[in-house]
Length: 449
Ligand code: SAH
Ligand code: SF4
Ligand code: F3S
Image (cartoon, rainbow, N blue to C red):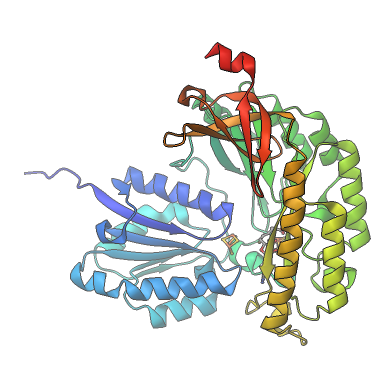
């Protein structure tokens, strides 16, 4: 008698950036085609998969701790498959460590061979210990199944990898060289997402501004935005991340003139000190960054700027830190992601002398966070009284409120009915908190319901 294919369960933990989040959507898509459904507890799972990040040390440590704690589960349930993928597996040191310290891991694959999962999983299920990590991506594999977590908003890869080699950063070693996707494939994907009801896309790349340079027929990111802007029924286009060095005037013009491209730009500065920027190999000075910001603000008056900052890079003095604080004030970022510098083995900064003591790093980051909080609340307070369009993403039945975001990416909660989910509606901003806004439906909308 032939048995029906058994339903299986996967627990997947995703760490790191949006690229990893999107890889998880692809992994879940592939797994769904193999009969796996997602569960949210490890006890229920037939497959536990950790999609890891290496950008800082802490999340890596957690992976070792978590996976070690699954040993008892595996003893109870020998057919359980435990897997690790993502950026950690792409580094030889971590791979060796995983193999030595976590002998109960059955399946290891990297960032370049996700499409190989069906075969790797089948072999792992038959008892073989699978370790398959590729140093570089081959041809970009198109048309993998994707299980999207959000029906209205979707991530779309435009460029893989990074060749910038900032001296602190592990990403170029874990994601390989820059490889742009063919613009036709991107446009096709977005068209089909829109057909499925997606209203907003976020274009992903470690440096989207480098898009198109490596293609056989070179193009650029501004040209891609222009093409995507013509897709009927697509409402909003966002993208991340932009490297300040590669931010061309054509992109600023595209942002200013294309109606679907939202007025939000994530522009990581990393430090306000030119001396440190040079040591980081960022390719711009404090002055160049500030001039760029000025050009952007002139062209797009209602722009919201956000950034990433590393505190305690080797050699950072009190003056360098002050320069960062001053820059944050001068630009007026609506929010910043702040990170304590974390040495990454194999990167040049890890062996630079003058590593900054932990205590100093912590004091500096607290100061920076406090300053940013003040600026963020002032920015949001400035929104009160204005009318903004929000794309309603969800409805909270307990509070009876709709949740959505403005084009600037500010989150707004508005009392209103669930039927408005998926619509873009104008709302009046009534109150501001540190991170979010409150609003009300405009009279005509309220009346129309
Ligand atoms: N490609 C993006 C960022 C990718 S990593 C860019 O260039 O902007 C996200 C952020 O993590 C970086 O912007 C940086 O602020 C931070 N980061 C990277 N390496 C780090 C390290 N070794 N220690 C602390 N923060 C780091
Ligand atoms: Fe890392 Fe720099 Fe590349 Fe961003 S641009 S991923 S910080 S090397
Ligand atoms: Fe982390 Fe890899 Fe993204 S190192 S930040 S998950 S590219």
